[in-house]
Every structure is written in structure tokens, then in C-alpha cells.
Image (cartoon, rainbow, N blue to C red; front, top):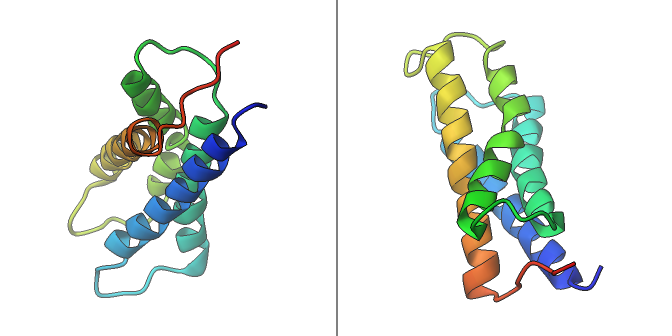
Length: 124
């Protein structure tokens, strides 16, 4: 792998967004249990790792971030269906919101990695 910096930077950004997502999710009255916190942080970190590791051309680089964010948010979205009903979201609303926010995080990680850090995807 030629560009280890891309992998490290994207993974660290994913972890940063994971902690931000955990902070936003824990704004309610009750504290989130630690397994849920760990799942939120690891899901977003995995998005960053996948973006840093991905060498596939999925169209434009923005589309790659959106698609990988959606794909790697699926486990977290399905686990949200098993939780208790929230007064703010229905279970279907939580599923869709988790996928949408995952796509946004994927796009943001790709933007920061490609534009700000200038770590381009390696070419085969």
C-alpha cells in the first residue's frame, strides 16, 4: 500500500466523528449504555478505515464517501431497530437517520481526506 497516510488520516477522522456522533446521541436524559457507545464509535471508525483502504473507483470521490458511509452504517442502523422506542424517533426513523448520518460522515471523511489533507486514492 503506497498511501498509508490516507488510511491513518481517514481512520482517525472516522474515530473523531464517532466520538462526535456519540456526543450527539447521548444528549438525552439517560446515559447511553457502554456497548451502544462502543458500537457508535466503532461504526464511524470503520467508515473511516474503509474509506482510507478503498481502492475501487465508485464514480466520483464524493459518491464513494456516500456509498461507503451507507454500507458501513447498516449494522448500526439495524441494531437501532432492536432498541426501545424513543420519544424523538420511531424505529424506522432511527434506521433512516442512522443511514443518512453515516452517509454524511462518509462524505465528510472523504472531503477532509481528499481536499484538506490532499491524500488522493492510490491508482492501480
